[in-house]
Image 1 (cartoon, rainbow, N blue to C red):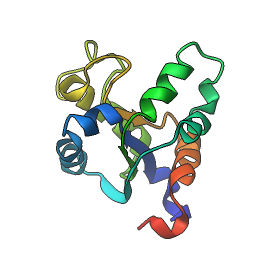
Image 2 (tube, helix red, strand yellow):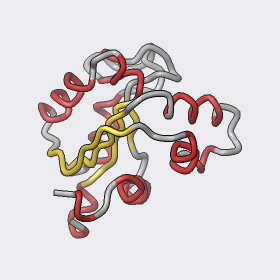
Image 3 (cartoon, helix red, strand yellow):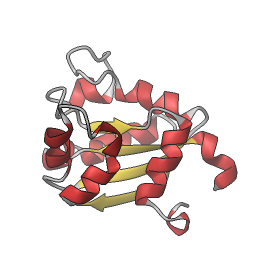
Image 4 (cartoon, rainbow, N blue to C red):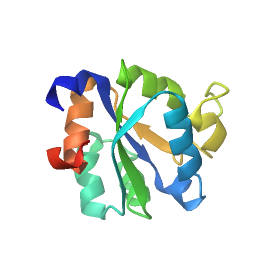
Length: 142
């Protein structure tokens, strides 16, 4: 898998979307957009795991709210493959604020607020590698 890392990105279907029964629809949108699922797990992060994952935001005012939300219920973590995966996934997700997201994006359709915005995606290839490794061993990537 290492030789394909430029074609991989990381995503999360967040607790709000899982709680609202939208995970299947979001996965369908992902595969319909040409992504291959290389890893997928339903998990329920502990607060400590969420704090570790979002450690880069530890000094930000929203850190506590974010980590509490992400550990509040199950979510689906994904390793996604497609040419130009990071940009393609971010384009499919849409803007963080669903009110500003383009029509046809996941956040426009499934998010309810800036805080509960249905999905997460890596912002760079380097962060995609780090985030995939946080949740998946090499044996779990197909």
